[in-house]
Image 1: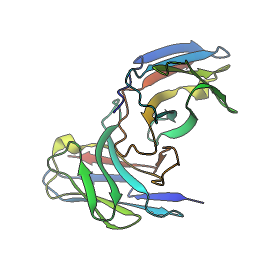
Image 2 (image 1 turned 180 degrees about the vertical axis):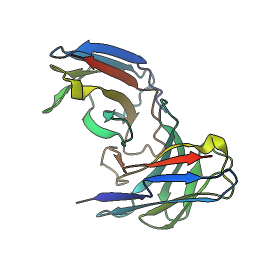
Image 3 (image 1 turned 30 degrees about the vertical axis):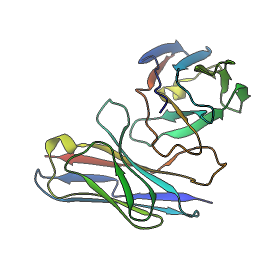
Image 4 (image 1 turned 120 degrees about the vertical axis):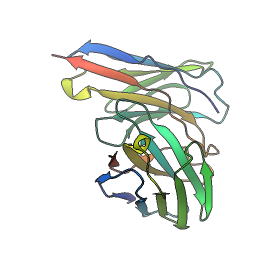
Length: 115
Length: 110
């Protein structure tokens, strides 16, 4: 069966520090991968998505970046965190095969507090 | 991309049926409608998915009219544990960019 691992669960970082969040998926091949962010009490904001190794589509953030060095690994990074980067970060995956309808599976999330 | 619109919040009492409607006027032919449930500090989880008419599983029903421009998630006899945020998402197998709407915050009271 497929599983998604996301870590760390919680993170407290000072403003201006770097960030690296990692997500890995097991039990599937060539998944679509997603990073979402959720501010306190708000909805899910799509940050990045990837349809293959090295293929990253960016939606919103200016000081965040994402990379997909391996088929089932998705990394969210920042060189210098801002206060506004605080939030709940969620990694998700879905099958990319033609004929399989979209169903997203989410990780357990990382609660990031930038102080 | 089909944009979705949902009520921001709803209140209910235990044992009642709750219907949450999602509007998606520009849904594409290949798009399915999927509903997710999210509890605080957790990732959303899949509830139900449908293309047209009615779909029912062990936790919910999904009603989709013929024009498919809206859908209604029906939760029978809600309990306190159904207090959560519910999102509808529209997309198909060829939709890579999956954007959620604002979601509906359901509060169930005893």
